[in-house]
Length: 137
Image (cartoon, rainbow, N blue to C red; front, side):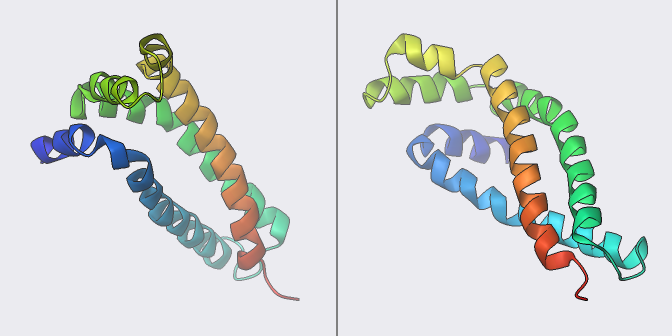
């Protein structure tokens, strides 16, 4: 499996961003199921928008806290050649200069981007999912 994943991160590097978007579907489903369970189990089937949104924010903060660890494990152990491959691709395709690619594609940059992105996307997802999860009056 590791070789398959490493291959996807090198040979298929040009399609990485479009493939990464498929992660959004299960991530949103996790929010929906978690908030539906919260509504049913904790709020006894009656939840306001604010309660659903705040519950989503708690999930978002937990995800944000875990994100740096997930990025580190993924980029250092699962796909250790990722940065080399993506820098090489970005430069060879003319998208970035060598220096721009090295500045953008590194562990520190990715941890910061992923952590902030997790919180932003969590807040947005919480706001939208809470609209559909709230109890109808």
